[in-house]
Image (cartoon, rainbow, N blue to C red):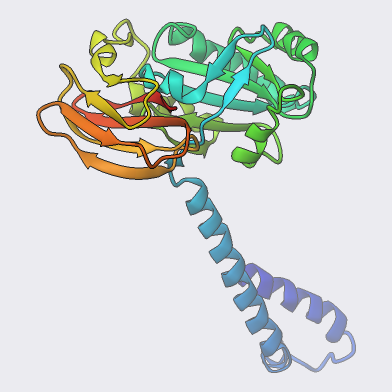
Length: 290
């Protein structure tokens, strides 16, 4: 604000003192404050309002939300479901890019280095490159080859994959969404990536492999029509949530003696998820209401 004031003083001095050589700089300050006080107040108020909304937007962007589920088909015709992979104990980075985006091109090698450090999809981290401006499968594969991406690539030109862009409000590229194993997500900057990944699944090392305890979280019957029984097995479970296909919480439950029966007869048919909080963190599994 002081800089704005100096600019005003300089402007008025150049335009005004030439015609009023008898005025001192003190006189000039008085004139500015008397004749421009309202404008200065308006500028201050506008600055406060702008900074408030910028701060609010920044805060909102850094707030973790529950990730919306989706199914997507890669350029190699492999089908992936977000919550299914999260249910295996994996974290996922969504790399929303476009073929002609220069920052996207430059960042791809760095992303692939992280992907390879975490086991190239065989450990706890997945990276999905989602082309966001109607590039074809062939164009996406060419992009991967040119810029060194070994992680799966996806075109949004086919099979209504563009709905993913709406779910995550993608209006420009690159945008990176990191989804932790507890299904929480938020957009992040590339400079934050290593820190965010390590806070979720730890640093890349030989211990980043899926534990057998994750397999012992069972839901049955599946598909089910009236109820599902949840068994945490060797996991020490505290609570769990019933989620819809978009990751919205329908009901929360406490778990006693490692077992829980959830009545689902009033739910519409479709895909649902159980997210369980355990001593190993959050785990998610899918079931079908028939």
